[in-house]
Image 1: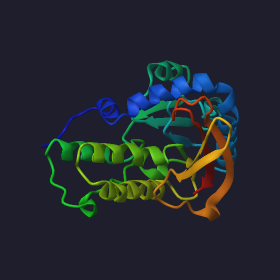
Image 2: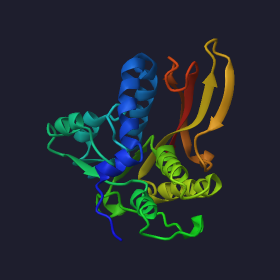
Image 3: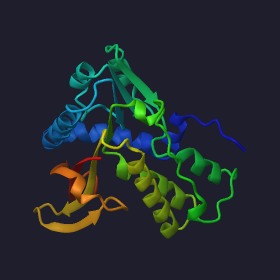
Image 4: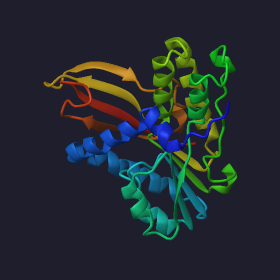
Length: 259
């Protein structure tokens, strides 16, 4: 039983749409706290782009463009492709101002339609090892056609929303869903064109009480990052107002890698 479900519907079904709306609201409330993180991200992207061929640049997980130096990249490259599972109307309007910016919708994880098919009974998956994580081209042609690719703060999101849906709909147990989540993260890194890509990801979470006492530290990834590839790290003051986790201050540790 094949599906023609749209990416927009998938985004809503898996919670990506709600998460994106929550993200822009959090940014508006935390604008000053996010500034350092956003500037670090933009600076690393531009630094990584300098020694690349200047044909086509691709941003995976473009979202609200908050952390993308899109004006500089549009000037630097002949073509700038921004990929996400859906694009806000405000972003579609902004993109029209640039002749060399293209918006593409794609399931960057390579899994959502397959998971949706399992839920509606189209496929029978007996174990996580039978589940195939597609190595897709993100909708922009052959991977080697891109001169520069950025995976932008999406690695843990790709696995998180898939895992949440698998567990929430009783498709797999938590342990089984963790195996698939790990597969998704590993496959994503493998899919990035070698020596042409950079990866930016928040990989550790720190929870503090209102007196700034550290309560817990947790991994946001199922895989280990290649430490020898990490070029820069910083702290993202993600939620200082206690909205993400009630009565908790939440900070992320971000790693920026050349891959």
